[in-house]
Length: 190
Image (cartoon, rainbow, N blue to C red; front, side, top):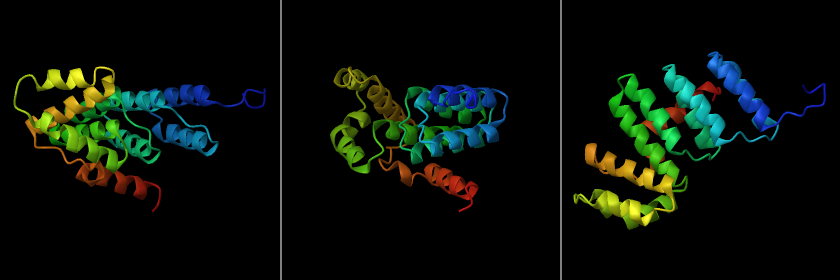
C-alpha cells in the first residue's frame, strides 16, 4: 500500500489491527499499534474498544489489561463500552471482585484522568452517590442528562459503593491499576 502511494492512516491501522486481533495475533496487533503511534498516528477509542471486545470475548485478560494500561498512558478516556468489555471479561471468567475494582477505576477514568477534577466530583457528588434513597439514580440522571457517559460513570460508582464500598477517588491507587501499570512496565522491559 505504501509503495502504491497509499499513506497509512488511522483507518487503515484500525482495519489491520482488528483483523490481527480477530485472528488472535495479538502480539502482531500490538506491534502495529505501536508502529502507528510511533508514526504520530493516534489510534482512537473505537480501535481500542474493538480490541477490548475481541479480547473479552476470547477470554484474553492479559491482552485486555495491556490495552487498558496503554489507553491510560496515552490518556485515552474510556467510555461505557470500554467499561462493559473490561467488566465482562473478568466477570465471565469468574473474577468478580476484580471486575468490580476494574469497573470502579474505569468509571473514574471516564470522568477524568486528572486527580484534581476527580476530587471536585467527589466533593460535589459523593453524598448523592452514597444516598440510600431510591430516587438518587433519577437525580443523577437528571443532573447529567446532557452527558450520558458521565451518568453511566456516576451510576457505576454508585453501584460499586452499594455492592462493595465507597469508591477510592484516586484510581491509580487501586491495586488493580497498580498491577496493570507494573505488568505493562515489565512487558516493555523496565
